[in-house]
Length: 205
Image 1 (cartoon, rainbow, N blue to C red):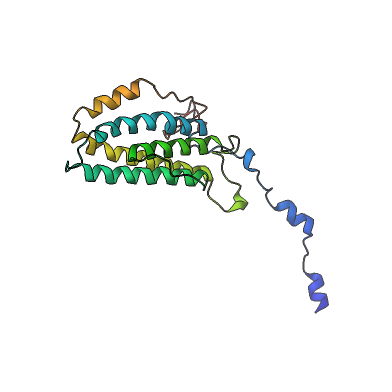
Image 2: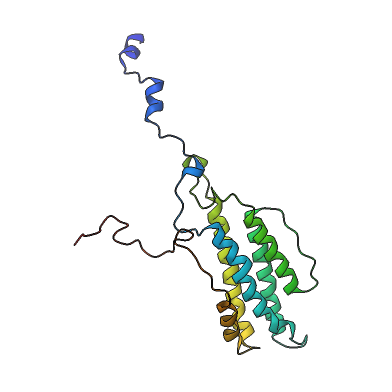
């Protein structure tokens, strides 16, 4: 029995270790193409979304309590507030609920909290792929998903406000044109397909 074991090939531990891939470092991993930069997210929350929500909330503030549209709009505003809270939680689990007595004030406080939490993230590692041995999804993907949910809630609010203010689209356009959201190429890579040059196919037939 011993001779049989002795005849089997034995691979040294050092050789086995040398064949394993090296452990990755989070800060040295590549940035994920489908996740925008942290700076873009902060500006999206603190500037673009804040202006759009304030513009949409203005007609609601002047709406009579007996107006039949008020219930649906209030329901959507509450859902928007919860989506913003989930964004804050995705970044940092602790948050406050704001001191405003009305929905627009509480939503504005929630936006401030979300923007502050985003600013507190580590800029170097954010947006980079998690090391494979973590077996976890990158936190940037979770945060971006929560931000997309907020954007979706804002867009769902638009047709409801349009029923009480037919000029809301022009007002939103005017609010957006006052502060054009500029995104550098290094800050955010959109979801468009890579060019032939990026694929190494430059000059291919």
